[in-house]
Image (tube, rainbow, N blue to C red):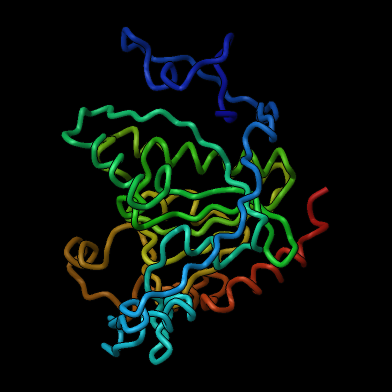
Length: 317
């Protein structure tokens, strides 16, 4: 955790959570470069996965679009990046699948994040649930991050997975996002983050909310060193993630129709007692009001990001 340091000695992750006697740990802001050995942090480049031939049942399987209710062959939806060819609705896609769509084959090197599991509230069955999600999704936590190339332009890319507890941000996710910026800072590379989250993780209470400040500080440190940060808001980007690192980028893109905001529209209507404008908190409404720089379809996202990286290639010295 390079953003903060103890006044004297370095601390382990367990010590950062709390001392045995429950006393508060003394911290001070550090302007030192993150203490990261890149070769120890990054895994070897991942080999492109070989595509398995589809079975007959998979070839005939249908996908029902929730936008227009059309039944489309699943194989066609996969080829179209889970964007409905009839109405253009962008359906959710897993973090691993999105990363495969995005980066050049064979260039992805995952950032190692050996973060021990913590259950600060002793939440019932929390550890079992996390273990089950790890096995089911193939993710260590709610973020997949690494160094990769997009049409030959290198960047540090992080993709949040809504399939992992709705991409909620707890201690581990906050640490992984922070490490993403630290690795990019060390390597002098741009950061691209695909945000998809329901907000803070309730199972970790106030420690989950603290990740908002931690990740925001990571963005500020990275920005102060001249780093380029591109945020891509996908459906949904809400809660503490939308109120922290997801909306602090130099360039903010969004997928069509994405729900973006802190509280949901229904909660806001009940709070203020008024009917919200049509399309409120959707990507198109936010682009119109200057909150989002550009809406980019999933099929065009890879080339658009490569274009931005090319334009800013010499920005950071």
